[in-house]
Image (tube, rainbow, N blue to C red; front, side, top):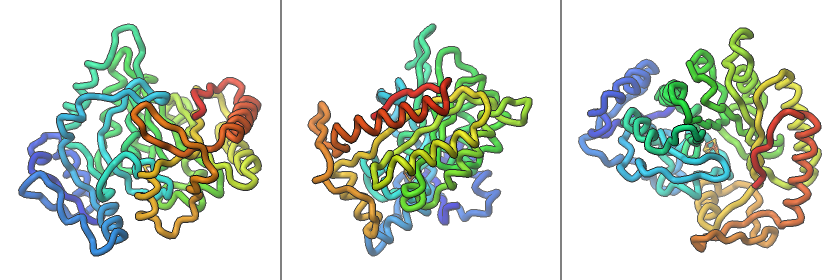
Length: 340
Ligand code: SF4
């Protein structure tokens, strides 16, 4: 629950904002209506204060015109789009540190109907296209306040060739189970080995709760589930001491919980960081024990000249092989979509 909810002037003019307003008021949260469109009052006396204030603020805003031009997001999906930016959790490796700038306030977009209507331009008749919704937020983490994820799932359920991809570290899936998704939304949970989830994933649901939620999403409707295609995103994979043992335990736990037939995929993402994300994360989590020692990593450059630090190629090869074999052994009909 945020401590502060603000609506910008432009957001309040959007009919969809009323739905968010009603939800927020149903939780008795104090609401501020801003006279303009800039969200202010996020800065504290220290970086740490700013972080705390921002993370506890939900700002209902309108998505800027630039967000209507979608970007591809390989290897996860054909396109990414955003219904919100920011997340209430506190993962010490958070991906958002490298992609969003400024205080980590949670912004949710009140012009959702326009955002969804815009997606049609990126569909191609007869060619399935996938749309990732979770690049800049954890959509399930704020769903109780916005209802926006449910809107998206309903919308994709009506499309012929468009498929929604969702990933989360939260478990409040009750309201999603009965939605008419029509098999067009793949619900994925991001999970990790105990030393990573226990130490670095503050404010999220436990891995056990995430897996139980995924089970409910995957179970057929006649068994009380949601009948969704589902997936596991194991990320970020950290090659700490005894990593094989810890990830073996995770995979065993997954196979115990998902002990039924279901449409299941795996995505495997090794830990990486950039100079920029490291700097931001060290400001947000100054006491963190997260290993971001450049000397232990290889440098990978992208086509725009950006640098990221990844595990050395020999370790990557061993880890990739380990996951492929161990997943195949436990889930012979699941598909591994990629390792990166
Ligand atoms: Fe960042 Fe995802 Fe953790 Fe939220 S759940 S803090 S977006 S890594």
